[in-house]
Length: 407
Ligand code: GLA
Picture: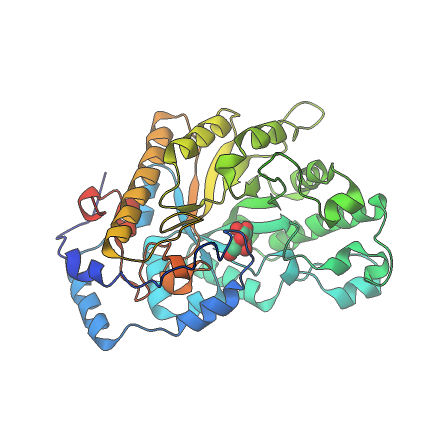
């Protein structure tokens, strides 16, 4: 393992700066509650490091040069973060991203809520796709900075405007028929890939979440307007159209949370996503990996192994690890942050072992943000960098530097 470490003097002084989260009210937040991440990101991005911290940072830079992207590249894996426009315009954050990461996923800007033009849809009678300024700005940023991009996401029950499901795009009318919604879905997916290809962005993309969060933990399908209008085969149809219109170079993913409780459901589902010749319409399963330090890693790896046996790729797509458990989140004490460092170490270690052994096809792992200052779960300190952008034990855990990871 190649590491550019000249001296590891960062040590406890720096790491003590990481103990900065506030206690999380028990049971307050589900890992899937749709918190407005944009607001929290904006509010927290204004928190620039103080002069004292900046001085410390520059002396650290002289002694240490570490990079996640180099480590993961040795195993054929891209390493990513989610991205907001606030992150690209914050120098501290963008510097970390360009030096440590080589892939981005837009936190919001490519979700259905942000890419339809209602007025044009009503005028033309077809669902009109129009990417917003933020998405374009971040695609250009990705291009300039040689970042690969994960597309997120096409078909989802959440962050999707309701009007797309109604006759004449008018919610005072009825839901459209199956045929009309299928035609809208096909047109939507076709336009997304056409836009990316016609504007020179398609080659940035290596993976795209075609469907997000369709399955429940009890194995049932989540009801939503897609299933109500099209029927339960909306999932197959979405992959069929994505397979028809996406360039070959973009892998098609199903993405979900609480994946460790959905293993059998996802295996069964993946096996239905085949064409008339029995070939997969899907390339991979995205494990969102919104985890907790008290989660059972054995169960997690059992699920990874189960899905890997399908022959599909697996990516971790939104990794963050909160302190404690979902029922009992914990404070950001030094001890708890050390537990988080160990968890990240063990998680990444188990994945790399499988990749190196050839039992897991994983070409990308994405963290859902950079710093605890701007995470959607910021109260639970889930990321690799502290609120003042210092690497935490978690960072060293992900970097597989055991002696700095809280052990
Ligand atoms: C889910 C979605 C993400 C994001 C998070 C919350 O995991 O897939 O896009 O909305 O919830 O930030």
